[in-house]
Figure (cartoon, rainbow, N blue to C red):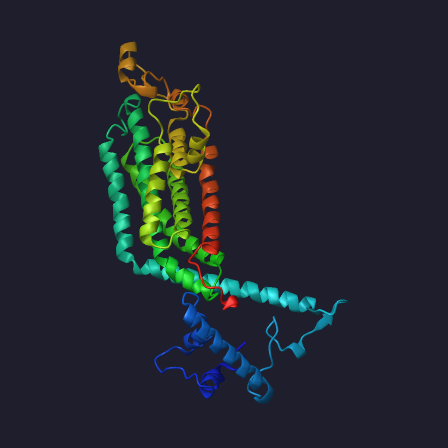
Length: 408
């Protein structure tokens, strides 16, 4: 310990022992620098450790002579002499139960304050990027309009059987588009902050879980709002059978999962370039294993174990299958008043969709015959939890290497 006393006396105290705070420097930052060891420079680390030892020695001397300096505080912040303690059989001084409860309550309060400060900083960053927010919002609307114009058969009043392939493609491309947008934005933001977070964690400003929760609370609502706008516009401009609520819910869950994946990748990388170089191949792999094969599924030729694992970790897979299941489950192709030839002429003519009679038969041919919407969609929540847990591990245990000052 190098100082414990009134805040107003701190600057004078350090000036008297030869460490005057410069006029253009924040005293709090200056004091932190005085007791910080440069763990990346061996020579500087030696000098820092010598300085801290001097400050600690002088503080101990001051405690004996200067009444403006408090007695050494113990773990709960009060002088040792004023604490209620008792001694165990082996002679170890222990804190009383009220002191322990008070310490735990203070830790929770401090953690909440750090979390709120990080959350406020993240929200301010988002608010300052109004131009980027406007561009992403306009992009979501324009992309939904573009997809609706490309897949013209997915319209009210159009032949339902002939639009089956377009419905699958429309939902698939929409998922891929919004998933990539959410992931790329998260990778860029998270990786840019990585160096700052490492420095702040070195100073023990906050814990990794506090930072991660703050980023989730600040970024997820913003990113899901773009998914909500995209899904709402897409539903409005097309004849998708899926309800507005289901469409929005699925795209938002998929966005949360993609953002969590971005956090996980960013937590293990040290720069934007490394994050992008890692994230893009992963996203391409998840896209390839996540799309539905239009030629159908052969039950006699199951995929390999590795492919099953990759599919499980693909947010795109669960989002696409959820939306396709919701779109076609219970769908009736109609065709009343048509002759046999008219019905046959309207049916799809290729792949797993050829000659299907209703929506349920479409799902059977695509390997989703027994699938249920929520059983598929809830896996997006499971993936989000897994990726956030991986992010916490990356923030807590992976980072640059430092000098062990204990052996200097």
